[in-house]
Length: 548
Image (cartoon, rainbow, N blue to C red; front, side, top):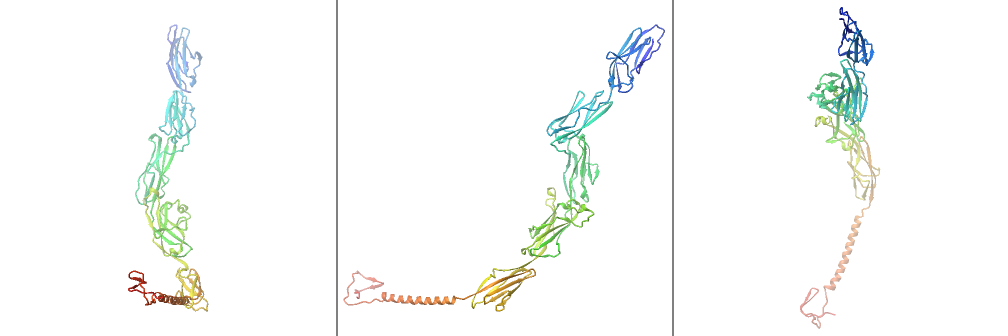
């Protein structure tokens, strides 16, 4: 009996003995799996004599087995071995494996905030692919796989759903991937980093807390790496402590890399501050005196303070706040042009000396005033409460002002009675104290004693007050008046005498007619009055007759 092995698409036979012949006996595996484009290695054995002929059928059609299988060659094959005596056949299912095809149906998407969106990922391969997704995972995203297709359902989209979504399709033969972008309209991209504390304000040479950076999501697969960057250098740690001796320009930044979001960062609001070593007040002109009405400049120098952008300067007169007419912007002193950053008060963070200049118009009421300036670093509610304040030593200012003559004591018009002198008192307020001078016509002969001028005559008298600031004059007109008081007194006296004489005359007549009565004693008749009758205060004790 002869035997034949079916290998790479052909059959080989062998004499099996002296018998006249045997019918074919064909044996093949039920299934065969091959890699696409690779030569197949399907092996069947056949026995029979004469040597059987091998025929391949697919879908009832005779085919020639290819040397290299493709995915279109996969299917159910019937292999027939026949000779002149009989035939035999086997059925073989050939499977051709191939890697996933390029991903289809996955496209960029745009969704309104709060709305839903689906992402669909599909690929064809033998065996069927498995799907994996890379994205920033949140609780509102669900994955579903069915019928060789994977879907992502984003429900109630938020800012954290923005970013890239990558679908991977893979089997043992290979893998493919595709990345798309999801945009959430109405939402701002956020970096899911939390820094604790979010604000650090530390005193120079002091102690401060540890800054910790971590992701806001509880899903640890979202973050690839997280670290601090200080002075532009990477620190492979999620915690950072400030060096309070030198970290003026540390600019600490937390950086993290996330699935789907890429790399993002958040800076730590960090301030290392220093209170002033001293506060000095001095006039710009180096003179502590000024004239009333002139602009007077004062400078407050704050030594070794940081950061200068948070510096506050307040001015005082005594215990009251002084509001300057003009306050110049504060500036850094000892500034070198080659280091322009060091000169910019809004940028520099290291300790510097700062000048604050004001212009004031001082009045005479402020002569001898005690001026001071106060400086402190205002760091808001996160800074020290209350802020440490430094006060300058007081500076006493002399205000020079022109004289003002006291017009209350020296009116413009003064009457003088003939024969009676009048004193004109000229007083003036000024700094320095003014010199008083009187000027009048040469024909006048007043008497001057100090600032007082005694005048007897009418005329114009000029009082002039002079100091180094200015000179002012006040002219007094003296008007001569007659003294009518003696005449009036004489007239009054004469009038009183005349009235007295008239009064005495009238009284004497009245007295004679009423008090001194005349009576007759002839033929006296009793009065009809009963009893004693009083007449004008006289009691009649006996009958009387009235004289006719």
